[in-house]
Image (tube, rainbow, N blue to C red; front, side, top):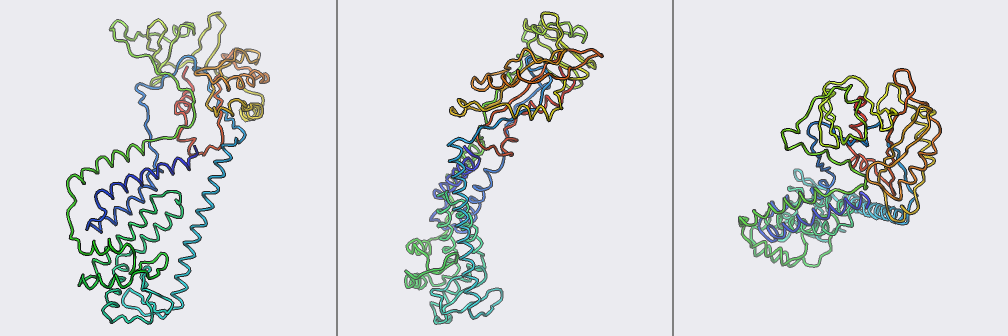
Length: 489
């Protein structure tokens, strides 16, 4: 699912929820000003709220916890993209079609605005305070657009019907109803696939007529008769015309009295807010990257409390006995062994290495780490050039991040490459293949001697297009934190 489709789905959900509340609490009620602002606010909420990122950060008490399997020098993530599949091409075609239709509809809105401007230029203009009266024989029934009232030269403004219609259009001008109309026309053009916005446009036009009728009808019976006499007169697009169907609703609202919104309808705002919050909390799944397991729970038995240990003693602990390490502020670490023993190491300043079971030292942090021939950019180019997206993974729409752990020995050769974390069967084999074919590295040194050093290499396989903002939103936060801990184990 592309970000555009996910945005449109959330937009439609928010617009539908707000429109449902409008139908329950405000539709056909003599609360016209409140209805106008609710409709306009709901449209803006449906457009803007899906763009607001909602984060649910996981709490990290006491620092960053990583399993021992991940305690190694972390290389930058290598991203591998797959050739566009048929589904990706279809999504691209949908986005292109969507943008094309939106552009055509926007051009139509611009064309209608140009027609009104041209009609104004061809009319005989007269100004009454801030209102411009444009007389033109091509105008059928009078209508208004912003501060211009278009009037047929054959219709006298001094007659009873003409005076009522002029007062009606003056209300449209004073309350700036054209702003609402133009906004909804642009929204319906840009979000043409959302059916709820067309209902908003229709309801907003009716609310405008209710407001204008309310402000112009001094003699309601005579005014209702004038409305009936204008039935089936053509109207210009984007304008506020005196004739606007349905006539029955206009006459019904003309004789309705304002009523207060009941307590139960006000109470319905609570489930509306909860539903909007639920829609906002929906997040698009980016990939199936493995997540680091949580640290072991703290001991319930007082006898199992933390025990102090020096860094010299910590370096003597075999790696196969370690369960996890919790990196604390001020360069301290909590170490948990597989037998349940937990140690606290305070204020370390030396580099820490762990010994494997065969007493061959494998360092996780050294003074001079091994380097790929040509540097980091050369390593990225090598991996990007040689890693190929497996066809089976493309067919199964499988993507995710594979962590390859390997050792660069004293001679710079790659050995003991393996997958760390949750495996991706269709992806890990390809990552291991390329890691094992890497050339000889420049060996790392510790205290002037060449040593073996352990590395972790994240390889991220992604299908189709990934927008940069989406990648940042669904990034793995612990990767960034780990790279900021150069002295951690």
